[in-house]
Image (cartoon, rainbow, N blue to C red; front, side, top):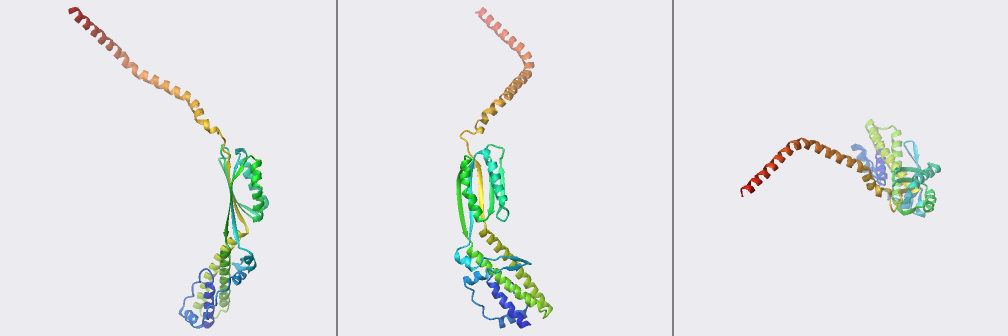
Length: 312
């Protein structure tokens, strides 16, 4: 049993080396000793064609089947590419919202298997300068057909396509490598399960194999998820649409300051009159006292001047 265990663990570490990271070796001096004594030389890594062929198989992960890379034939015919499109549209303000809604509806009518709305947003819908945003993930054929009619649709509405960008990412290497890791982890998991089913050996040895099996299964689930995400990026394309309202030569908000000034003119005049009334109300008591005093001073000064003239 120990000899068989050592052989299986050594083979498992070699298979895991083809994957993302080698699984953690099972602890215990007996396992390590037999692994060093009995392990055969590690086989050479499979050629790219063999790795791609191995990735064509479907593997079982946590009870569900996950589709791997499509195999050597597809990879040999051409690279696995992920396309991303970005288009900016300038439309009349009164047509922007309805156009955005029509595009969302077109994606929904195609069905979730063909097109999915990732994000849809409309800003300042009732204002003079509305804007909108739409992000779709759809089948490449649907995306091509949809984009082909955008320019004509914009021109019919009195708008235009401001920009149209296409970016491509080659995912061939990542998909093939990830598929090989999934295959290696699957083989290692199956061998550990077979070893565990024999139920022969000490309890500590069986517990060590169970821990190793749990680590391998966790790595397998993670790699299968990454592979599924990469395959989705190849099988579908991402389209981002930005909508903005057409800028007018003279927009209504240009004369807003003048309109606000006329509207506030009455308030400013009333406040000024009120301030004057308050000032007069505060100064009136002082005027009652100051006027007689000032008048007396002026009369006395004039009399003094007359007397001096009379003496001279």
